[in-house]
Image 1 (cartoon, rainbow, N blue to C red):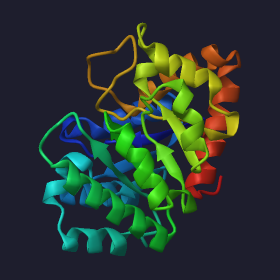
Image 2 (cartoon, rainbow, N blue to C red):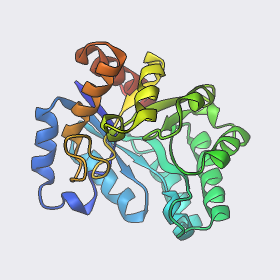
Image 3 (tube, rainbow, N blue to C red):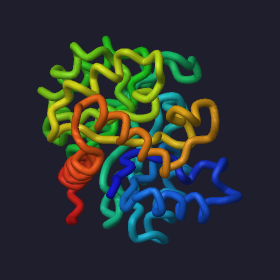
Length: 256
């Protein structure tokens, strides 16, 4: 069975066929998934979906692109809702230097505040890193993020940086890009991540794996990610599915 550790199934792109999409996920072998709430409305919908479906859990936080919009009240709300029994992580949070909506100093401040919150509530964190590795690593170290650990979501750095994140108590999660024919770095990463630190995800509706690249992504496609990683590591699909399920349950403290 498969665990999609990062899915935006609360996205408006699923408004018309959410039930059918979730059924396709189950048919593909997805038995657990984490829905991400990373702004005010997204947090609400993530909690609602986690309450509605037994196999759905929630992560709540504030996305770096929208960091400029976060208020102290939003941070207080995240901390309050972190006690919900279906909330398993804080995030996604991080830094995104691709888009310029939120100034870098505000992104950094919001990231630090969320790491501190996660340490108070003792939940792992989900890190979004886009073109910001040079600042992400020092902040994680300075804030002692290793105390709670977490996930480098949709890991996009080179293989030689993997150990840096492993040393800070992070798991490495791979999604659709590992299936792209020209994606050398994710394929190398897939081969070297220790078996007990590897996770899989879709990040749906974004980053659909081959052969669906460019189309709307959905949780059922995490099977394509698992199949590709199993091939790259030279192990069976069932073994890959089992070890990534076990890793996700351990990190998110979900009993099997």
